[in-house]
Length: 212
Image (cartoon, rainbow, N blue to C red; front, side, top):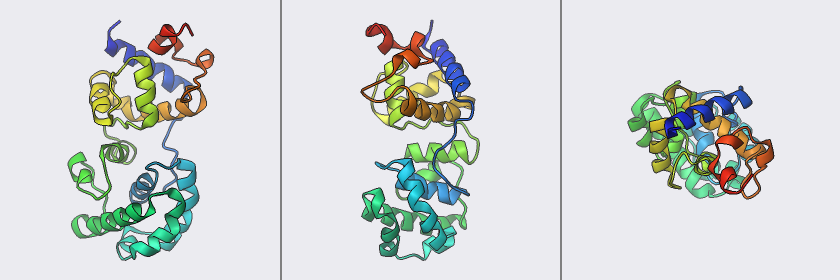
C-alpha cells in the first residue's frame, strides 16, 4: 500500500467516525473566527469560547475592533494567556482589514499571511471553513496523529502540511483535520491513546510497532 492509498483510507475511516466534524470555535462571521483563532494559540477552544461572547458584544464588528484600545481588548482576553501580544495582533489585524480590505477577511493564503498574528494554520482554517477552499490545518492533534499513523515524518507544522498535501484528498483536507482534532480528544489522546477503540488501528504504525 502506498502512503497516498493509506492516507485515503485514513480519511474515509475518520470521516465515517466523525461525519459532523467541524471547527469547535464559536463564531458568527469570518472576522470573529479570525479573532478566535488568534486567541486559541496555546489556549483551549473551550476557554476561547468562554471569552469571545463578551469580547464580541463590546466590539461586534471589525470596524469596532479597529477603533479599540488594545488595553481594553486585554481586559476581555486575559484568561487566554499571552494577552498582551494577542490584543496587539487583534487590534492591528482589524485595522489592516478595515484599511486594506474594507473590513472583509481576504480569501487567499498570501493576503491572510500579511495580517498581524496570522500564520499558515490560521490561514488554512479560514480558507477551508469560510471559503470552502483546499486546506490542511496542522494543529497539535493533526501533527501528532499523522506522525503516529506514519503519514508524515516531521513535527514542523509547515513540513507536515506540505507532506499531507501530497497524499490527502484536498477536497476533504479541512474535514479530515477537524476529525483529527475530535479523534485526538476522544480516542488518540496524547501519552495515553486508547488504541483498542481506534478506527485507524489497522493502519497505524504506532499500533503495529507496539503490538496494539
